[in-house]
Length: 233
Image (cartoon, rainbow, N blue to C red; front, side):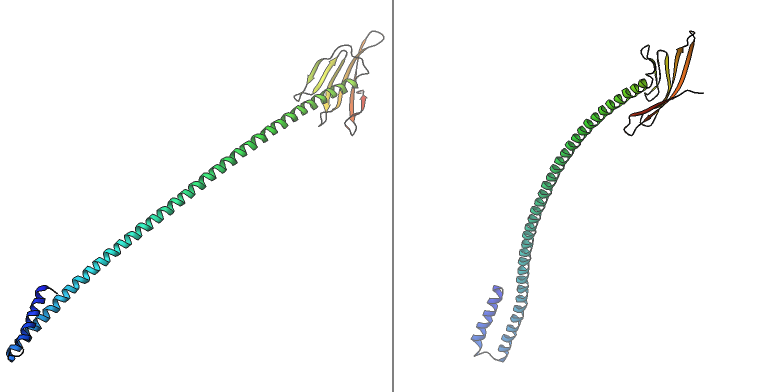
C-alpha cells in the first residue's frame, strides 16, 4: 500500500475517533462513505501492487529458471563434449592399433610369401637340375643302347651326320659304312625300333648294302630285354 493512501486512512480513522461522540447521523454517514471509498481504492491498489509483486516474482522465477537451464545446458554440453572427445580418442586409438596390426600382418604375410617364393624357386631349380641330369643320362643311355644294338658291325669312323627331331631325339646317324635311320620311341622316350643299312664287300670286290629293321623291347625295370633284327623282304 502507498504512503499517501496509508496517511489518508489514518486521517479518516483519527477523525472518526474524534467525532464519534459528537457527530450527527449525517456526519457519521459521510465518514462511512469516505471509509468505503478509501477501502475500495485500497483494494484496487493492493490488487495492482499484488500483480506487480507476482509479476516480479514470476520474472525472478523465470530468470532463475533460465539461469538453471543455461547452467544445465552448459553442463550437459560439457559432458557431451567430453564424452565425444573420449569416443573420438578411443576410435583413434582403435584405428591406430588396427592399422599397426594390419601393417604387422601384411609385413609377416609378405615375409612368408617371399620365403615361400624363395623355397619354391629353390625347389624348382633343384627339380630342373635333376630333370636335366636325368634327361642327359637317359639320352646318353639311349645313345649307348643304339650303339650297342649295332655292335655286330665294327665302327670304322667316328659318328658323324647325326640327325635329330623337333624334340631333340636322335632320328638317325652315319657311322662309317653303317647308316642308322628311322628311330622310333615310346612315350618314355625309349628307342623301340630303327633301320640299319650296312655296306659290305663280297669276295669279288663288289659292294653290297644289307638292310635290317630292329625291334627293341624292355623289361619291367626299363632295361633292354631284346633287340630283334629282321631283313625286309
